[in-house]
Image (tube, rainbow, N blue to C red):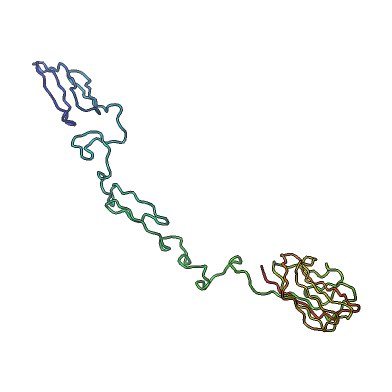
Length: 288
């Protein structure tokens, strides 16, 4: 009987032996000592046609390869490092470097050395960018065509003038009369002269024109009314007894009126006779 040693091509240190009789019949087959812990060996089948079986040993670390990683010189399970990954190509996979994100930028290139680079996209990079993408549309001088929506229009800073014609009428002694916007007659009922405002504004610059002398017995008091009430500190004109016909004004006092509130003027004659003739009145309305 003789013993014939053999070597596995996978690993040089893996050795086993086959025992033969002189006539050539295999008597026994055994796996020798591998010298490695990550592989097991066994023989099966029969003595004429033995079968070699290799298996991974239990308890191995996941995500490793069999090779010579790093500075190793012998085969074994190991984890590849970044330096051992191939560089990427135009049509081949490879490793790339990590990249710290930069706000408002995108990755636009990855070199063949696996180095990414980023840039900030411009209007020309956007498939749905319109012509105004690169134009400051908040600057009116940059806008030459198009229609602006109402919400984009600034609030008016100019006056709206509200007024009425008194038709040179007088108010009887001790009476209160109301004059409305655009009317030429007075009324003792305020509801018949109040006109609703379509927008909110501040009332200021109250004017009253009379064309005759006020009664000697007392003053003539004209007040701008808001919602059938006299606003505290609102525009008011007082003409003294025997005051000459003239244009009178209150340019100091103001009142706020909301959209939908009514506006008119109230005229109270404290004189002993008929009041001065009222030719007309007006008040400025500055949008809020």
